[in-house]
Image: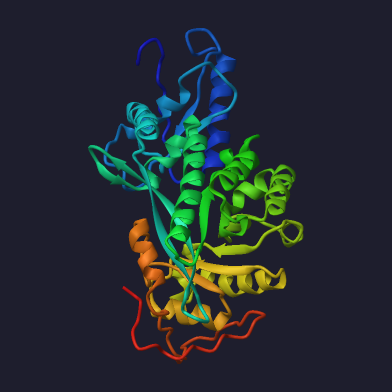
Length: 377
């Protein structure tokens, strides 16, 4: 017993989320039919997934209880294992995010993107961090899911947009050749009624040239509501901003749909980049993505490049740009701008491969002559 409700726990071994939902709903229907819950059909189903890393045996039950709280309904609510905070923790994070917005505790770090052919920095990706007064620098994976769930992702995203435009203009004011800056935009923010207006207003206030701003969207954001997303993308394209699809390859985009969208770049998800050095199936997806993107006249950016071997493969496949720890992690603005003044990255020469490479449409770019010094940290 917990409070006024009986708690029924059913353990399902190795069951996928959708199948688990069907099983739980079948159980609830039987409970309702037999009026087993205090003589009334008042069951509230909740599902919690537990990975092998769970430390407390009561964690799944508590999460399921969180999900089942509230009015009775006919859909089993699923609590994914990736969202590990308890309800009180989520409330604490939400309250902290509201304070962070008021007290300007957010900060942007910048990760450079490198042109594969020349070794030069072509742009930056702005990545959000939270300077928490107690916990220090908090990465977005620890607070963005809460921000999305409670709606704070919209004002946070608006702050990111304004600060990126401000930073780009600040770099221009000191004579730095202005690099393009990309920002990640959540589905909730992108599909909100005022998003395009916010972009237009930020560009107008900062007087930043639109082509120096890039909007990154997850593949799922574009595919979940294709008609609405297409309309927003058309408006952004008319403004002159660049548009890229992030984490490409993890969704279910169709070629016919992609070719109708005003896109500029595709970013290969880091999971596929990490698989390049082995013989896995994921490794074979990369050349297909590069070839398809080039067929659509889109540039390709590989994310999460950490080794010379990965870079060599990407170069041989005709990948246009890359980013990752091989060159630099995301760094504060002052360090990011210092990277521009360095010599081009020394790109590796041809290497002997132990497995075949399926080349994309473009031929591999010739490696540039190595400069006297390398900018790789």
